[in-house]
Every structure is written in C-alpha cells, then in structure tokens.
Image 1 (cartoon, rainbow, N blue to C red):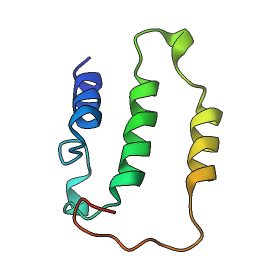
Image 2 (tube, rainbow, N blue to C red):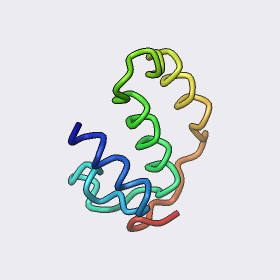
Image 3 (cartoon, rainbow, N blue to C red):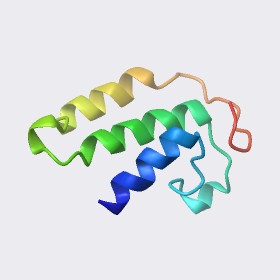
Image 4 (cartoon, helix red, strand yellow):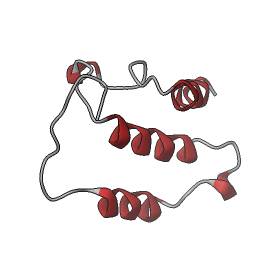
Length: 77
C-alpha cells in the first residue's frame, strides 16, 4: 500500500525524486520517468484483475523506447 501512495503522490505532484533510483542523482527524463511510474502504479493495483500482464508492461515500454539516447537533465526533459 505504501508503494502505491508514493507512486500516486509522484504522479500528482510531478515530483519523481522519491521514487527514482538515487544512483540517477535526479538526472532523468521526466517524461520517461512518468511513464515508468504510471506502469508501476498499474502493477500495484489492489485488484489483481485490474493489473496489467507483464507482457503488456514490457510491450508498452518497448514501444516508447527511442533509438537515440535522449539528453538527460536534472528532473526535466
């Protein structure tokens, strides 16, 4: 339950520092982080029937990947 609250809070405030890997040192694409947090939030829904299958999560991530590496800036796009 706590994970869900952190994820929802991050999505509502658009502040992903609490859920991002500290090794990133706040250097990440906000758009890409939002997509990952949305996927994570879907995976921890209370109802198992409403959770996506892993293949759906992987497929959605694969479709959003870009061929070239985006320039990373501190918490921005």
